[in-house]
Image 1 (cartoon, rainbow, N blue to C red):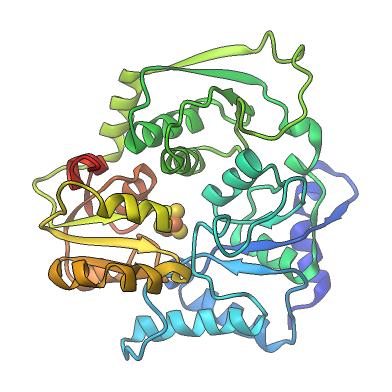
Image 2 (cartoon, rainbow, N blue to C red):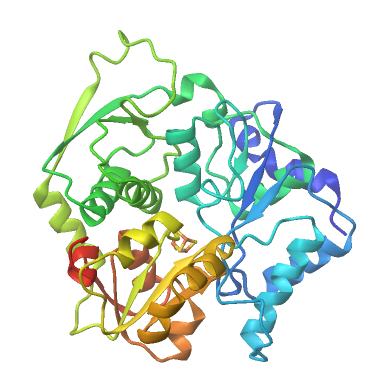
Amino acid sequence: MIKERDLFELISIPFELEGKAPQFIRISSAHISGVSYNNIKDEGLQFIEDLSNSGFKVKVPTTMNPGFCEVFNNDSDEIVKKQKQIVESFIRLGIKPTLSCIPYLYDNIPKKGEHVAWAESNAVLYVNSVIGSWSNKESGLTALASALLGVTAYSGVHLPENRIPRIRIKFNFSMKDEVDAGLAGYVLGKVVKDNVPLVKNCFSQKYSLIEFLASVGTSGIIPIIVIENLTPIDMNFDNIKNLEELTINEEDLERARKEIESTKGDEEAILIGCPHLSFEEIELLFKSSRLPEKETFIFVPRTIKGKIESKYAEMLSKKKNIKIVGDSCILWYGLLKRGFKRVATNSVKGAFYIRNVLNLDVKIKRTREIFGEEK
Ligand code: F3S
């Protein structure tokens, strides 16, 4: 039987490692990962069922990451049934079945200055770097424990001194689109290690910024990037005048692309939406000069799936190769069920995990290569 004391022990680990007495801070929300059956398997499912049957309830508004497949249907497939059991157990704990990895845009929007306990690295980087709320990069388990306790460890970037930039990163190339931004983030995440970086705001579109942050979270451990004229942070600018400077060049991006891609021929399907696409991004995509002919799957939060399908019903009924997928991560059971071996995506984070977790051959393609230029 899991006790509250066990949950406190779990979130006290950072203090234990440093030999310090634990300190906690109240949180206003939580976001949990570790929802996909593909990640947590039967042992994880059992653990969450036990937890949900032991009477625990979340103490703060809590949302959940996407799973492995669509869940709100009558599919009798064993994997789908297990994914459903996971989601239902989380619902019993009081967690909203948002199944979204962009909760910061729709379902769970913290305010500047609020302390929160979030898992899902792209979301943690977004709330710290763009909104100015405070969250460490929690694991699925520690975010869940904090949601049930209403507090998190008062450590890491909950302390103002750990949010100050220690290194300046210069991008020595023009950031044209989401793929450049994703590759730059992947390189940056590796080179800065645990130093909070300061970068110029060279992201002309919101989705490029989201792709950048998602990639930083893929290769690195830092939970915050200080972006000039964007990140709400109180800084003594004298302190950051003499920061060590590192430059990321075009060749670094090409090297990263080669490391992530494995191209053995033409892709059989196109995947867009890692992190999930927002309604505005979908509108931009569907305004493009040409729509793809290949099987194309667009991953979105369940909150907006119905709205997209009804607004674009006519187009989607003509272009049957384009499907809107809700509830699921891009690491989607549907890819395995359909037997795809080679896919393309515009997401650097997506490509990294599709290759390393699903073992598929993956190519990184820019949206404009897939959809043409915006009209
Ligand atoms: Fe979201 Fe899955 Fe990508 S959770 S950020 S679609 S790897």
